[in-house]
Length: 234
Image 1 (cartoon, helix red, strand yellow):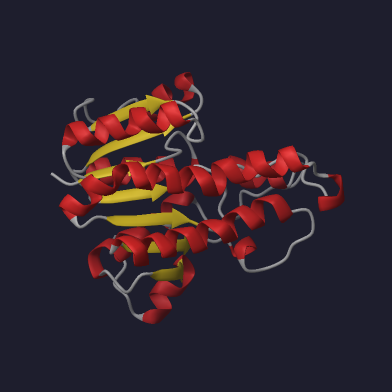
Image 2 (spheres, one colour; image 1 turned 135 degrees about the horizontal axis):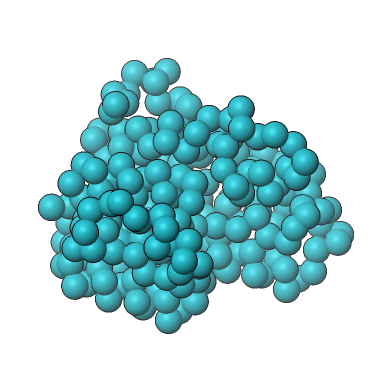
């Protein structure tokens, strides 16, 4: 049975991935900051030997160790998805109004934590020839007013993910899922209706395509997969 760790599995794309992978026969370890919300997210999924929720903040080293212990217990890691992230200080505002502490707190979640967690999981990734997927954003390569802290963290995440792949001989992907109808996206646009954006579930097949086809490590846009002719699982 393949094993995945999906951070930020209590909402959005992380939740959609946990549901799909568990239905497809994977053992899935996942986390979220709010214990009650995480428990609610996994209600109705297969038993705890298949879906393992671990509440905590992904930027907390003690929580990273707890996740690593669960994966070590399972003995292998076929897929690591760095999905947990933060927009940074809300409401979004220009960089001149963002403090250094706020920048560092945003980058701790969006860039530093994924690197630290990957390092802890290298033995299990190597056993399974596992894949690392970091959920990126078009903000990592575009420049949007008020998105600076988040954008810089995602740009760093892209570079760090792909550098780890080169250094450690891993298959690593930075994936831009595009706009989605999520709570995070709604937080970025208060007062607007974002329900017309694609659902997180619609992005999951693109990530599964990476697992099936194993293209070279790199940065990919989910929306480009169909156009490129890559098979997209139903």
